[in-house]
Image 1 (cartoon, rainbow, N blue to C red):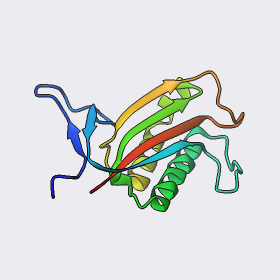
Image 2: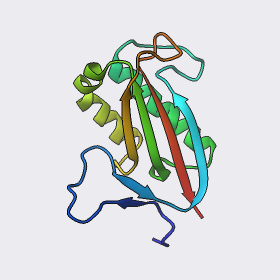
Image 3: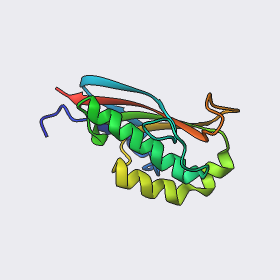
Image 4: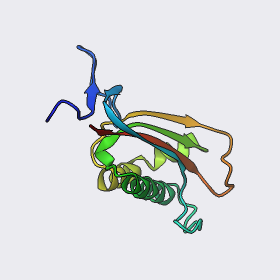
Length: 135
């Protein structure tokens, strides 16, 4: 480590959160990724299953990271917008598996929000990401 890698922030005495970090400190080149939904590169949905759309959205995030010269471990901030909290929670195990396979460790500061709708009617979730590539 050269001191420029993102650092997870965990105040003394706080329990380690499950599935996210409370905060992240990083220095470097910022890569911002617009909300990614569960369709493929041609804008086609292949499933209405929540977990399948989450996997595709994460694959889309990883593709944009690569295009920006970044990798999943550079993610410092991730926001999930979901249309159904219960569906999101019910798919948790499958989402976790996809996240570990595509993104890796849970080192990003994360927020998840339930929203009434997304711009694409078939979209069940949207994932927005900020990454910082170390200097």
